[in-house]
Length: 238
Image (cartoon, rainbow, N blue to C red; front, side):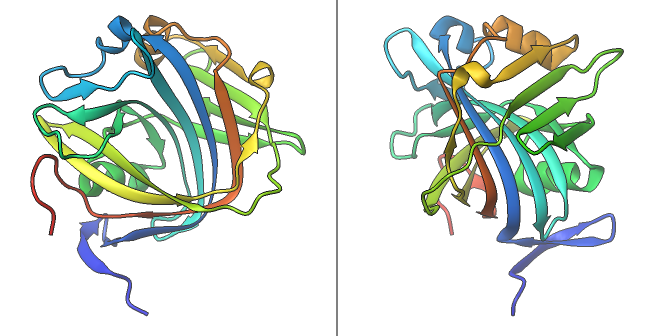
């Protein structure tokens, strides 16, 4: 079976598109944020912010544990707002990714260089108990971010969902489509524990009004995903 199209090599390891994740676990949280605060982290000259209601924008926070796939095992935090490229009304609404950590190094380099995702250095760890999962971004002396939530189970078969991610790396705006196929377990927002320490990302989240309970929280185990090669936003794809 073909591995797809070779993008290139990173640390002597080939990177192909589409990039397939065979197994992953994913936490997704949504917070309502005042639009004026959201605009402080969205490049207004490049993107139009999409509000959920006048004066309110949804902040999406995700934590992923990539267990098995073409790029191997990886852990990441992701944060973003829904946007559309400025002056490009025909482009789809998508999630603008904010710079956030990913580990280990190969996954971070592949996501940054091949996908254009604004990944930064930082050690992300995932810990499971029978009932909970905890994602931790290392800090000094305390974790910069700690997210804990119940491992909610889903009784509904997963269905694939198409998602668009927008990125802005080195002044270049890109669109990266992917499909996510995940069971959806609904978590009581009151059962989510989010703690912020010191560090630049924690400071940004405080500026946005966190930590507090999310409006919506989901957990999915045994998910899969397919990431496609990015293209310049506002341009024409192949």
